[in-house]
Image (cartoon, rainbow, N blue to C red; front, side):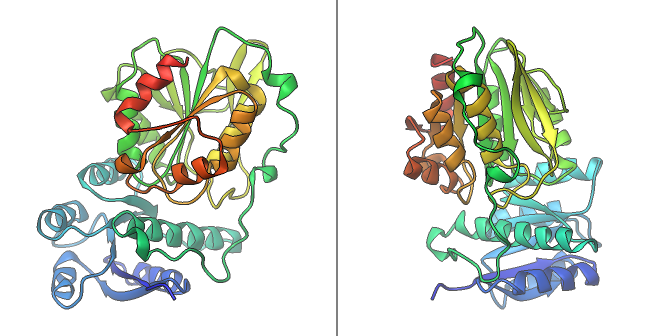
Length: 357
């Protein structure tokens, strides 16, 4: 039997602490060993027992989460998942935390419909597991009991036939990218490597709602290309990257020679929304040989099936290698499924994309 992942919850809200405790404890692979209402209480508990993962609130009394994160990373690095209900300026803080070493971000669970609560449970537990795997690959539990059903891209877009839509060669290429845990920094490295006239890029990064717009704005300031959160009917154009909005699926579509984006609701696919499998299936159907696929760091197998469909439709596909991944899950599964043409370090991927565009 796999060893349970030990988690410490740090949040000034008693309701949030209790809710997170209930959610995480419902997973047989996770054990909550401590809860603290601020960083000072957390520091005292750390002297008694070191957890595998810490969930850390952003705004707390006496010391904010960002300051505490810096202290953790400088004194005793532990995988940290930022937990926030903030939007606007708060998203800037969380993205800064990811730059400082936090593994991922989750939004605070709130009361709502049964579906919302079940999805929150799935995403929170999976994020904590990914954080644990980022430092201790062998400590992760392979599966959980009573998990929500794992849907495929069929629930959003039927497989159909890619031949009629994607066989015609065009002068324009499209780059389709999928990433999860560790992807915020990987995408920065990747996108900063492109010249201003590169082919259009469409990205799914597993990230909560409200955070993707700020993430795109930050990348837009850092890159030669423009970067924005994708909106329904946006055209794929050279020199621009579009990032799927959190909590929405994004599909590549084609009308004549024009490639554009469809943003839509739908169930979790491969336990995610947005899902890389949904993007990759649409790329197989509507772009085929006109597409280059990239799969990056992340836990799980989202994107593996879709990347194989892309390859079968004529796409050239690249996977990030294990050494440069924070979590070598998604790329590993894509390779295992047979959908990858080349595996390479993160810093070389953009050059390989351009060589095949």
